[in-house]
Length: 538
Ligand SMILES: NC(=O)C1=CN([C@@H]2O[C@H](COP(=O)(O)OP(=O)(O)OC[C@H]3O[C@@H](n4cnc5c(N)ncnc54)[C@H](OP(=O)(O)O)[C@@H]3O)[C@@H](O)[C@H]2O)[C@@H](O)CC1
Ligand SMILES: Nc1ncnc2c1ncn2[C@@H]1O[C@H](COP(=O)(O)OP(=O)(O)O)[C@@H](O)[C@H]1O
Image 1: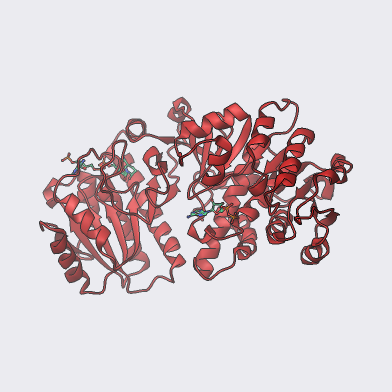
Image 2: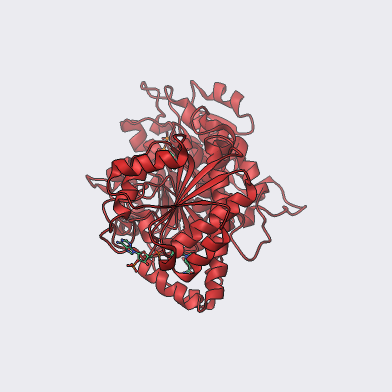
């Protein structure tokens, strides 16, 4: 796939530093980038804190400030927060004397003079660190802790007193939101065991590779597009890993031509459900009908089809004969194949249940359906990917959407494995597009990995994956892009809607399907004609 404008390269810290040195050849350019970074970080914090509650006017902010530009970004972010919340209180912990700060960091500090309190961190033990934090906050803790100690220039080991400070802050439980500038202090191409434990890492300008190692090693990653790739030097960058930007949604946010009818927007077939798991199918269908696809036909177990159809009358429901287990009978596949000429894509799996019959059904679908087919949940079988390996190149792609447990099963590995090479080789060998779900969802076609950094723990509840597969399949069925782009588009919409849900209603006391009500706002809030930066940060 040629890398389109909606994805930006993920670089090692060393490559990011080299690339930035080509873009920023003088202090004025660096200062401008730092100001954008500071403004972007403060916007993100104001937005992300709302997953907990609205930000209080009198918020207490603690910034940990190192001597480099990472510290400078944190200081500029504090200035922005103060501009929005003049009654906020900002305390800075400096680990170097002001004379030792890099000039732009010193300039950012000067800009805050008289508006913040400074503290030097000269304590020797973690306990003394806690006492200092208690005394600074007068025992009330902090709403926000901003880590600007070390950025991409970190080289292990962590030197004293940074190690003590990071440990003290990590252990201090009276902090609502921990935000790392660029990447958590202690992370880097070479990381130290001790790292700032971030809830969010706000990647400034370039998303660095260490952010995507392991499972959410650096908290939630938020990529701030500062326009670093609007530069001729960007052409020379290569590599397999990219971070998605909301620009991928731009084609969805256009007025539809006056002359179109529903057939123009595709027809999705969804096969799933079982007598004891009808809800998963229902959720996939609910999401699919919201995706913009023109028509949805759902094939459901005959004992539940009527009840489901009452819930989503927009879809056409076809009752499917059941086995004694209440699962779909594979012998009834002609029900689907007789109608297949009407479809543009197929989704198999939500709520299907796991038995020999559904296994046969999934295999049959992989063999017989020439259209793009998405396999999710119980449709994810090792035989399906083996069949995909031999699929004719004229057929539509097979897309698999495993979480790590399911991935281990179909990739026949025994341990969770987040190595990009594992995902690349699996997708290449089996000739599939893989969407590997998790805190940072990865989408891979065997040549490229796209990281979707949207979403969050509000999605960690039953049914989120069913909504995702319905959205993805609905995007593919619309046939307005290649399958990889359609999959990535569905994932980004799902994540952005989840963020909106969490900000409006919190992460905890919500239903999975409430996410659906936030999908329209995602699209409607995009500034589609913006040419300079990613389309907004939401
Ligand atoms: N370039 C730009 O314009 C833009 C940059 N941006 C931002 O700048 C960040 C990079 O800034 P940077 O280059 O100033 O380095 P940064 O990571 O802040 O500090 C390095 C200092 O840490 C120190 N140090 C290292 N290892 C250590 C250890 N083990 N233990 C203790 N100390 C250690 C080392 O000190 P030294 O070894 O020299 O004594 C050095 O001076 C980047 O991540 C992003 O946030 C964005 O604003 C976008 C525009
Ligand atoms: N901590 C998290 N951060 C971000 N996204 C998450 C997190 N936990 C789960 N998700 C997302 O929620 C969805 C869960 O899908 P899945 O595991 O199939 O759930 P289910 O089978 O219950 O529908 C995926 O899109 C996954 O990426």
